[in-house]
Amino acid sequence: MIRFGPAGIPLSCKGRTLRDGIADIHHLGLTAMEVQFIKVNPLTRLALDEEVGKLPRELPQQLVVSVGPADHQGGTPSLEALTVPIRRRDSISTLTWSLAKEHADLQQTKALARALDTDLTLHAPYYVDFFGSADAREQSTRQIQWAGVLAEGLGARLTVTHLGFYGPGDRADSIQELTEIVTDLSSWLSKFSKGTVRLAIEPSGHPDVFGSREEVLELARRVKGIVPVLNLPHLAARERLTFDTADALAPIVRDFVHATAGRLYLNFSGVEFYGPGEFRLTPIKRGQVRFDPLAELLSERDYDVTVISSSPLLEHDAMYMKLLYERALTRRWTKQHAPPPARPAPRPAPKAAAAAPPKGKRPPAKPPRRAPPKHPAKEGRSHGRTRRR
Image 1 (tube, rainbow, N blue to C red):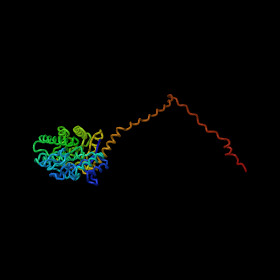
Image 2 (image 1 turned 180 degrees about the horizontal axis):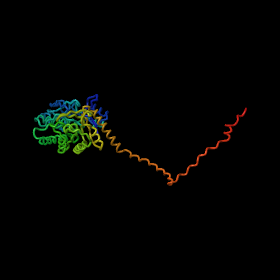
Image 3 (image 1 turned 45 degrees about the vertical axis):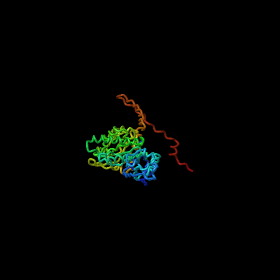
Image 4 (image 1 turned 120 degrees about the vertical axis):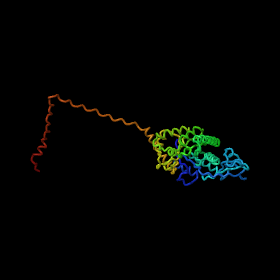
């Protein structure tokens, strides 16, 4: 099965809530959406007297992501802590997010997405720094974990993230350290969501940021449960390739499908790249990478894939990609079910040629044609006298 959808609420959506966006996506004939959790506004405080004894997820107008002792101070979120009543002197961490005010909003959005058959994923905040200060590393870890809490509440199946810049040392050392970090994050997310949400690692178009094709695939091979994201615009910008043909794309898609061991997650948009690390995402029709070869490749076999439009035009290019895929699928079906060519009609047998006369002899002359006899009555009327009256 193949799904198409935008990275965020559609631009044409009149409402700006997640439920408005999902309903609009359904009306447009799309079946996927990548929720954008970009800005993080956390607040950690002590529990109020009127909140004691209540479940954290039942607090109105509060998006609680973590509960713990007084010295917890926004520590690692725990599923057990979110499912037991709040105690006196507990520390509560909440988020201010424009797309949801409380856990009830998440549950209603989850129910609507399932009713309309819309596949949800969630992108964690973009700024991540695991090789900076201790505070920066802890903040990066918490942001991905908070994204996991929201993804579990929304019923999203993936938490998508970048891994930030390389460390100051050798890149091999950075990859090894990131492998340990990702292993811990993946284990935490699997335990928190009971296996319903997986961690997805996205490649980067910048050469100074972790995320080449080989690195993402290697990380997926090392860490069980990791989903490598096939972000073709980023790979094109990083490798300075345009992937003009389906043959050029085939080995890349095959490697990511094999590493995913399930549904392929794919991001696409137009892209224009300049110097090393200099690129920008564009609408598909203006970019240096076309979707037509990918549509042709995807139509050749029954892939289980979700295609997310990260183009500035969002849902417009998502619908355009769906159109290109349907055209490629129609060409494939027509080619497979084309009627056999009609057999040519049998040519008539040539007439037998008349036998030639023997040499030296002329063919007998045909008798002269006689004129038909004149009718006597007609002749008399013609030349006789005129009868008097």
